[in-house]
Amino acid sequence: MFAYIDETGHSGRNIFDRNEYFQLGTLLAVNDISEAVGLMLNPFLERKGIVRLHANEWPEHELVYLTHSVLDAIEACGPWRFNLFAVHKPFVAPTKFVDTIFDPGENDATPHHWYWDEMHRHVLCLVADSAMNRQLAESFWEAFLNDNAEAIISVATELEATVRASSEPDAVKSVFRSSIEWASNNSEAFTLIATDKRKGYQSHSPNLFAFTNAFQAIHQFCKTHGCRPEVIVHDQQQEFQSELRRFYNDFAHMVIEDRDDGGFPKAELAPYSKGDFTLMPSTKSFGLQAVDLLLWVSQREGATDEMKSLKERIEEHLERYYISRDMSQAIVNTRLLKRLQK
Image 1 (cartoon, one colour):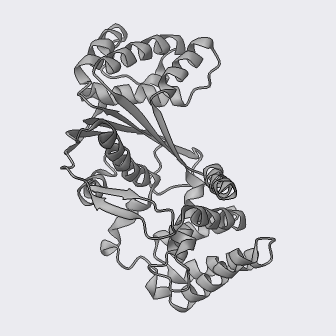
Image 2: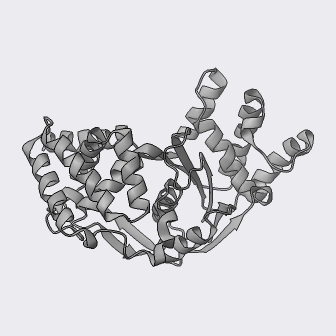
Image 3: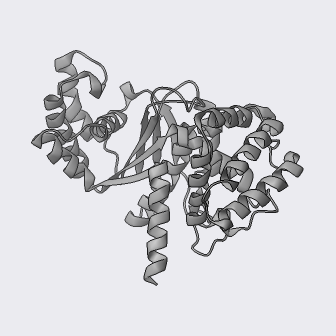
């Protein structure tokens, strides 16, 4: 299978800029779609006198027609999916706070189910987000990126006091109190001392979160269609080239699944090679330009009947994954409903 990956709303480590959302689109196809998509895109590019498509530069009515043509070409090549990973960047601060303080692999005072069970972990994220105003969020993020244990503990202590005075359930208050107390007494155990000479902080950006999620989308697609990765193409960029390659080499072969019993997620090696990974400018990849079109559609409102029809067509092949407060709340609500139905 072939995967084409592009992003919009680039942030790097700056999660508090004006553009609050980051999206990464992964177009997965059993066969190489490049030639077929090129036959659809080339006439448009030649007519406009351009070498690559930037969808946001052209009228909607032209792009709706063009996107339908591109989808026709993709569908003629065989099964395909579009995985859309979206991050509300400010919500990264409370989620990374939970990862830092409550990971029971590093914090002996955190019961395992509070972190490894999906519902409990998202409860912690929601509570941390409610207690974390913008100033505290920025203070934690700066401390986290600088591996400043003293400042991390200062933020954690202030959050614990806010949670203690809140109307949160006693069980939530208890895990905040015990985990943060342990972290305060053992700060050297949970800072990022394992990071390779502090150069790995780029890996704590929405860009890299989304990239690792794309691996799991690739594995699921291969499982569904009985194929294996052949070529994975990512839009070329300067800032993350080394980190993207490192993450691909270290993690692309891992298939990770959450368990329902509150235990450590199940991880195993994929039963195939991870394929060839390449960073390529979109001017040289019609697959990447197709992703640009799909990302553009995903950000448009369905104001016209033509756009609504196009979005409905893409929806049939669309898989979404979000990091946001709304998504965490939806996960908690869904898990609670399932428990009530048992």
